[in-house]
Length: 305
Image 1 (spheres, rainbow, N blue to C red):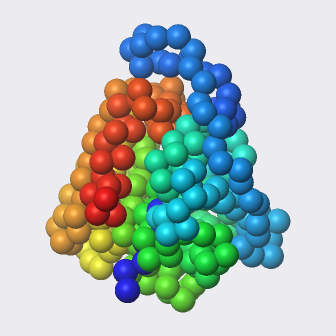
Image 2: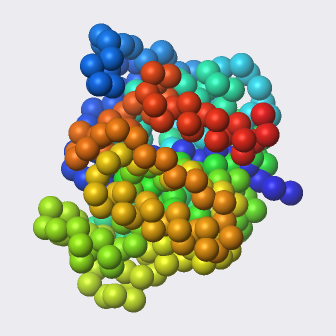
């Protein structure tokens, strides 16, 4: 049976700027081309915090859907932070939990072990372990364990794309690509790790070496684009702003997925540099933000509703 869980893996910031403040229900300036005054995100449904492993960072927050539907799909968000920082408590933005729970989805936001204490390989394993934990506890928590999408921002975009293209991570948790309906990477720039390390300049060079090391074989093994030939998760929606490396990496990932026979859509949104990179994470779920209806429509198509 096809397992669908919406995994919102929004990965903090691959760039330092993605670590911007994100308080549920907080006030923020709507920066959509000067579109209006401060707005306030609604409050999400009450959350439960639980551990999916033994390490202090192997925990997640679960939010039930606002309509009380115990067969709702689940969205799991994975924060970012350059693989070495970030938290489910401050890196998933103001809008995601309230928007998706109000839209009839359950929502989960996960923590995972961080570099240098852990490796990127272990982070991928943590994402898969969180999926497995949620599936195993679906009846208790109240959602449909047969409907899953992974979503991630920045470093989290890399992690969800990796889990969605290299099945070893899901297999390590006793799952397969049949556990996932789709993946939504948000403004990543390390889908092809060797290329990004050679072309990305000095700004993130130390972070990349800390995460991926200097062994070209390991860098290739951690590159979703280089795993995209097949098989993969069934469908991808790759969204990004107008950062040069993010655009190039997103296009290459889409092309590789399509060559492998995987449905892969890509959408570019206004925003440049660190500000745009942080903004797409903070604002996704805000009905006034351009990416929100695009993601909403894709989710409905994936889930057939």
